Length: 235
Image 1 (cartoon, rainbow, N blue to C red):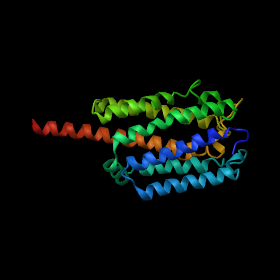
Image 2: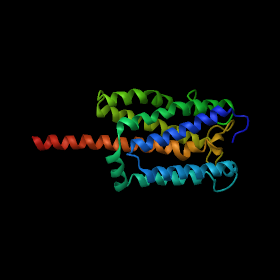
Image 3: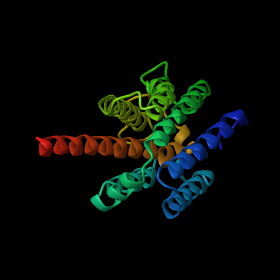
Image 4: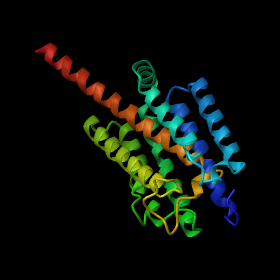
């Protein structure tokens, strides 16, 4: 763990990670096996981070690839037709939209990590990170969805913009880390993600947020296509 970092920051982030997994579990029809796999993956990454495995950044190939590659593979696998269909059928969008509230505590944690010189300023809402906007708007969009006061088109637009925001800061976070491909933040690199519990940001929170957006966009798009087909058939 990071030395001299207030415990409340660690606990806030841990609770945020647990909330993210919990919301993902509930919004997807409570898939026990998938949730267990995510928890097991998070525990494994946490143990590696606690042992200092990811803090050795001068090794080639970078050890952080053991976080990135499996996560990318998980998202790609989840987009296969069979898995995607299962997720879409069980998805409760009135709950999944609220999941993105987690971006608010994440932004608070990132700001204090910047203050403690563990991430560059570009990763905060004072820099290039506009994720706070998605987090603040999530409960509003969620309530509008519950009351059916927002159109599917607007939901698609909100999800696409929010997905872009998380992808944008994810790329910036990777490119400001202590990796051979580092391009930003040389004066204050992104080192926090090499420590527990912040390893859970790239290992669980960000992948869940990205995948949630992707599935919601696909589900909304499919509903629109189905309506268009029905309208054509009725003519």
